[in-house]
Length: 92
Image (cartoon, rainbow, N blue to C red; front, top):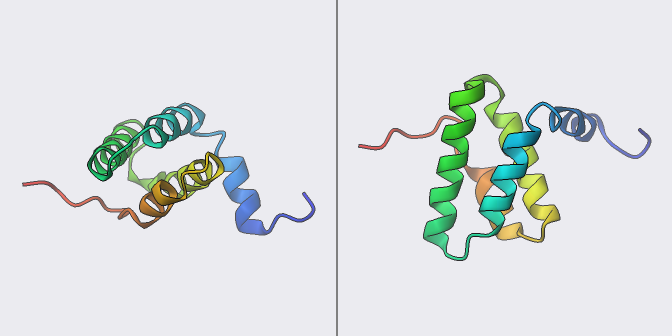
């Protein structure tokens, strides 16, 4: 694919592995209207992904999800997702 760097090409291929989670997560997160609902939905999406796929691919999923959110015009949500810890903190 001309014009796409190696990381971009890898992200493009990996999005097919998680298409269901990416579509659902991007849709739900993009529809959030408050910062609190955004935080809750990102956490829910990440936890759901971890239950299904485990932690090995979480960083890649997070990166592709951020790209999808940016494409939907939600750069704020994309930046939040991109900075979300790959090792989610346990809640007490």
